[in-house]
Amino acid sequence: MTPNELRDFLNEKVERYNRPDFISSDPIQIPHQFSQKEDIEIAGFLAATIAWGNRKMIIKSAQSLIERMGNAPYDFVMTHRESHLEPLDGFVHRTFNATDVKTFIRGLRHVYTQHGGMEALFEKHHTSHSMQPAISAFKKHFFEIAHEERTQKHISDPLNNSAAKRINMFLRWMVRQDKKGVDLGLWKNIPMAALSCPLDVHSGNVARKLGLLSRKQNDAKALVELDTALRALDPYDPVKYDFALFGLGVFEQF
Image (cartoon, rainbow, N blue to C red; front, side, top):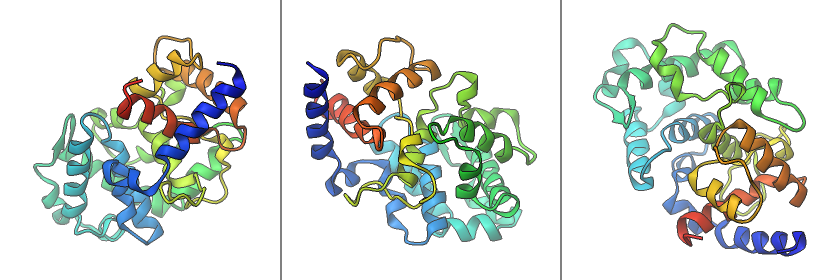
């Protein structure tokens, strides 16, 4: 395909999948349950954190986690005492367990009380063309609290050559706004042009088949290559093509 044909092809797929009926099969349904900004942020962050494996199990686990927090994530984070964390005992999603959840609850309260909240922290550290320095800074500040070493693996650091798929997906949810009803677009001061595609097995394989990506590993270097290719197609909203790559890979087995 020529560049124009490729753009038209991908734009068609974006239109197919970037619509409200996509929500019911995707973890983004978890933050969509809320109306308060901070509830949406926390629910989205936790759902994105455990977004690996079977999608139905991701949604089931995320829903269980929100219910254990009394369906009021921000209030739970900000007002909890240690005894209030007992309902989290027994939670597990793959390698993310109750110890990790409790650490995340404490880390989130630290971010809101000491750094002005999630949006403020990401806004402070992003650049006009990349969220990756902001992700690294967020992880650093998030784990300023006492924590077990094992829990750090659940937030990737792109400056350590990770593609940081899950947190890039969370940032797409929070920042991207196009009035189609899927992405939430809560954070108004971070440009969509700075977002990165959530690079995983599905999107990576499709990107390689389409000639958007040559690097074999799904790492930070591959993410830069894919971002560059997608920004050439749409400099203003490159990460919209995540809908196309994901849909082609998961729904169409492209």
